[in-house]
Image (tube, rainbow over all chains, first blue to last red; front, side, top):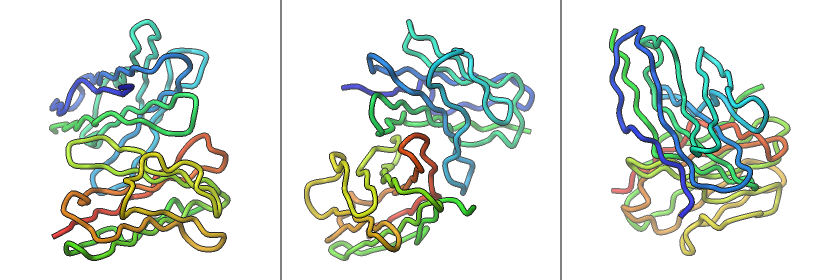
Length: 112
Length: 112
């Protein structure tokens, strides 16, 4: 079945460490890609999105993601995390329609 | 501009009761989507509505679940005769044009 998979279920790291979260999708053809973040007790917020063009996408809060078509990947990165980045991160794909297909999420815990 | 509103935030029901979840989209948004998140899983698409019309309900269970988005008022997701397996977080998203989706805080349903 077509899907989105996130490599890590839970990531724990210290402040100032670099973060990379893996995301792979299995849809062929044109696909829009998204990363959402859910801070504790809050709603899902869009971090960044890729529709077309430059495969390196800059988002909010210092996050970026790289679309690698040959690898069907859209990994999320941040060079130096802060305690406030503790949250759950969801990768999502949208093929040629409106339905978002989400990965299972990665819980990121940043230790002060 | 207020974000997507969902109420209640938490809902407890006993088996066999009905659950009604409400979603007020952002002002000017005529597209509404409902997603369900089961424990340890990503969000799964349930239904897509525009004012007074169900566009796609392919993700909705065939029985007991229904959704509406009337001309006036919020979108309602209704679950009749709830069972323990319905316990989940239900998220609503809205969009002005069917492109980017903005999420609400979710309703956490617990069925006793």
